[in-house]
Amino acid sequence: MTATAVSTPPAERSWLIFALSTVGLWGVWGAIAGMSAERGFPETLVYCVWSLTMVPPALIVLAMSGWRLDKDARSIAYGLTIGLLGAGGQLILFYAVTRGPAYLIFPVISLSPIVTIALSLLILKERTGRLGVLGIVLALVALPMFDLSLSGAVGGLGWAPLALLIMLCWGVQAFFMKLANNTMSAESIFFYMMLSGLVLAPVAWSMTDFTQPINYGADGPWLAAGIQMLNAVGALTLVFAFRYGKAIVVAPLSNAGAPLVTAVLSLLILGAVPGPLKIVGLVLALVASVLLAIEPEAADETEANFDGETV
Image (cartoon, rainbow, N blue to C red; front, side, top):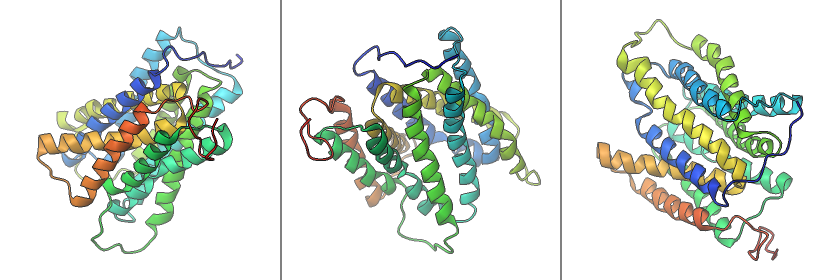
């Protein structure tokens, strides 16, 4: 079967609906993601459960598309590349947090949109207007502030290459998500993402320390499944956001918006008051999200592009 170009989007701003869906789903997921681990269900097994939660949405959207799966060599290569970069980055993260402080690792990882934006500008020749540029810059400044802490012992720097590798994996993954959407269906992309997650599940299983007590009760794997379903569906809507929107806009919007929702929910539900640095990050993320949402996607109209020229 030969991959064909994806049809034009059904609505001019449909990318925004999908991107905001991802923001909402991942924002809620972020607020409760640690609950199963706190109740004695290891993160590595959470990964295994997550890989299983990818199956239902993948099969549902594939069925809705008439079970049309792109099976040509290029589509398979794109799909598996996207899936393995995402799932592989997650597995590296499990190891990285054992080598260094999470408060430094996550700010580095959060800058993955820089990689996506750079590749999209250079290879896909994407452009946006002045408001879009400002929104992207504010989002990139805000992202590290959600996790950055200026206190605590750092220890060695063995974590740094791992954090950079994860940032690269997830940044390149988002770029390929946009690139693949030009020649294959979003449903096929997500199917191969699901498949890649399942392929790496045995690796996560092997990384689990089964000598420690593990909670196999309802608030262990079943709670993890409910939480990770939010993650899985959010990943699906992100694929569709990249299908209809520009990577240089979708990547920073989704990465800045989700932590914003998480912080607000944590404040409302848990009463967790963010520190001064995080408050600054929240304000910047809010402004960035608004700018990226209202910026017209068609940079080929009368807005200035990144080169400062009028197109």
